Length: 176
Image (cartoon, rainbow, N blue to C red; front, side):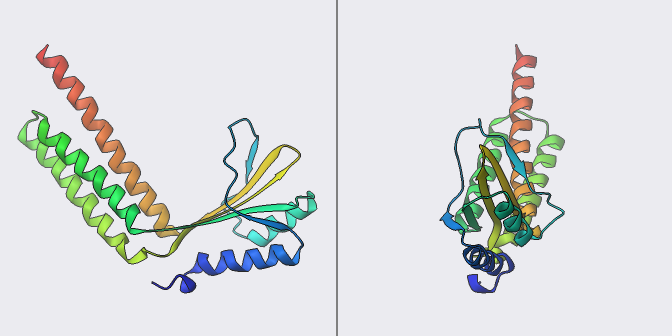
């Protein structure tokens, strides 16, 4: 998909222009300093990013950190690798057939859901705006609904992997 046509791709460009008109200095990237900085996150229910920029200017912020996260085939591949690792782990376990079928069914469901995200490759899934004022970090994050769905799916796959790890430990305890 053409990156120019997606909602957040357009929005981030508009926001950068808006901040420029407000004489803010722009830094393409996000603050990734240590966890020692108090962080305040703009409410997810308020998607008025221009209001966030206005707020930053009212707080005398001069630099706007910004980042658009594009969804790529690598995102799909990373989730597939995790699914493969779960499948390999399942194959190495001595679990009863009904439980194995349950896990395989989950893996199939996850793979089917993952394939549905192919259509979003090249789109912006998330935008982040940040300003640093008086030692505090303020940030605005907006995600596309489909991107939240992808993140939830990846979390579910990781949780399944952890569940298998626990089952593996339980089986080892039963043997010993």
